[in-house]
Length: 334
Image (cartoon, rainbow, N blue to C red; front, side, top):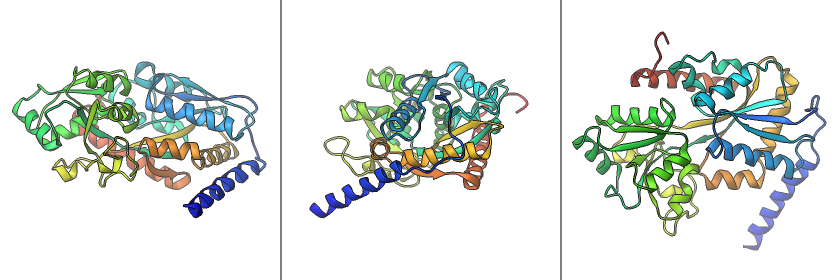
């Protein structure tokens, strides 16, 4: 035990030393950096951005603060348009999820994910199939059997219409030959509240959006939409950890889906400005606070920058286009 503590202290010392010995940058912000969020307050993106802002201050990673600005109007279009109309502005970054691909394909929005400059993908966010803890459904197979027997009667709640949750339920319907009654809400927090109150029967919330209710014994996870169980083994409830949740594939539901959590700058910024934020993001994800947050909310490590990030984004965009097309969510002419 003592050796492990010494190793942990040494690791933290290395992180601290690296932060104190930060290199001189070719470019640094001359004023506060605005972190634009294409989502509302209290969302998973909002929680992540506020943690990042606090880490920058706590560890003196930047001379200027990061100010979080939620702009979730019009399904997030407000935030994306803000970045698009700020070309060359290095004091504005955006924290995005996968709906950056979906919004321009499902609505008349003058925006494309290529109207931004990629900086880094921080993590991948898992999706879990949730029911109320008092629900009669103990497995995904039981839930799907009920949905098949009662077409359109099982109430499925999700964050928004034609967003990640809606798309995932559409994929489940196609894979399992069932039909849900999908009900959109403003965000994942609202969805968890509705599920706890039995106003809906099932959700596909991210771990960060439902962990409190799971820990309190109000919700039950049925399966995770990934190829393998989540890595986190620390107990969330008295008996279960994130790694205890089986994959949906193992329960006969052949659907996988993860959501990227990425950082972007406007177009027209300079290479040294991009390099500055790449370095900032690398330092943020190396902190103990980020690692604790990531572990607690079951994020999947997937830090990417440069050409690897560009390749990933294009592949992810193509996958979302195919899913949207199969679901019938594409707007006319898309």
